[in-house]
Image (cartoon, rainbow, N blue to C red; front, side, top):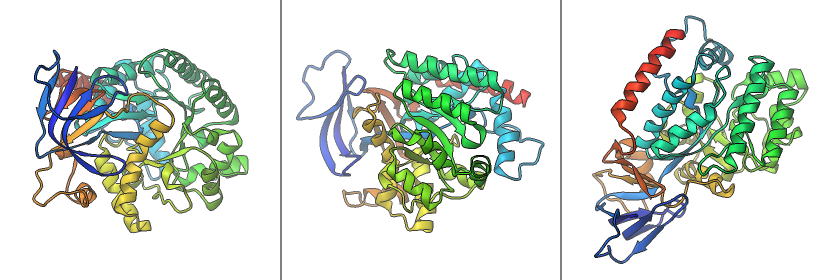
Length: 429
C-alpha cells in the first residue's frame, strides 16, 4: 500500500532544494519515497491519491530531548513552597510530580505528548523518562502508546541516587530489561539514562556505563543545566561535569546525548569536540527556569541538536525560539538554526536507529501572502510560519495526522482518559 501525493512541492530537508511532481510514499519502517511520472491507472488496493497542490511537503520533525513524564503538567497547581532557584524547582515541582506517577498516569502522559507531537509534525521522539517509584514496565508503556499513535522513539529512564538504593536498582533493572527487549522488538530502541552529575554518585555512574557498554548504547543525561551541577562536581570530585563524564567514557559513543550544556567552560568545550556525544539544546525550558542560555562557541555545530525538555512537543517553536535568542547572543544565522533543528535527524541516521525514513513527511499549508521559492524557504519558516501550518503528517508511510486531525486513535477518548489521570495526579501533589 502506498500514498501518492500529486502536485507536490517537495523540500529536501538537507539541501533545501525544491522538486515538484508526484511523490509515491512507500509504507514500512525506514522505507522511502519515489518521484513517479503518473499515478497508476489501476492502483493497488489500499493505495491513496492525495492532491497537495499549493502545499509544502518535507521531512517530518524529530525531538532530541523530551520529558513525556511531564505530559500532564499543563495547568497543574503550583507548589506552595518557594522556588527561588533551579534546585528548588526540581525539589518542589518535578521531583514531587515524578514520584506520584503510576502506570495509568504514565500512559496518559505518553498519549498527551504523542497527540502534541502528531499535531506539530513531530514523528520521532527521543525521551528521558522519570517515575522513580513506579518504574517497572514504564518504558514499555510509553513505547506502546507511541507505537499506537504512530511515532518512532528512543527511550531511557533516568538513574538517580535521590530516592535511595532500591529505587536506583529498580531503574537500572528497567533499563537493562528494555534494552534487552529492544534487541528483538521491531520498534523498541533505547539509551542509558542518568539524571545529572549532581544526583549520580560514582557507583551509579559506573553501573550505568557498564550497561552502556553491554548494550552498545549511549548515555542520555542533563549536563551543566544549572551552575549548581558544575559547583557540586567541582566540590565533590574536583573536576567539571564534562571532565567527570569523559573519565567514565560517556563521550566515546555517538549515541550519547548531553542535554543543555549551558555552563561549560572552554576546557569542557574542547573535550566535547574531541568526543562523539551530541548536545541537545532546550532554549524555552532554559528561559523558563532562568538557568542561563546555551552558546555554541568552541563547539562542533554538527553535533548540536534541539529538544523541548518537556515544555511542549512543538519543534517549529523550539527552533524559532532558539534562533531568536541565539541570533542576539552569538549572531546565529537562519541556515545554522535550521541545521540544528535537523541535526536530530542526522543523529538518528548516524547511529542507525529505526523509524526516521524518508517516508516520514509533514505537509504544510501556509497560505502565504508572499511568494515562496527555493531561495526564501527559511525566511518563511522562521519569520512567516508557525505550527498552525501543519496540516498532515505521514509516519512510516501512514497518515498519523490528516486535515489536522489525529488519524490513528480516537482523540476524544484519549483526551478524556488524559484528563481523568491528570486529576488523579494533581490530587496527589
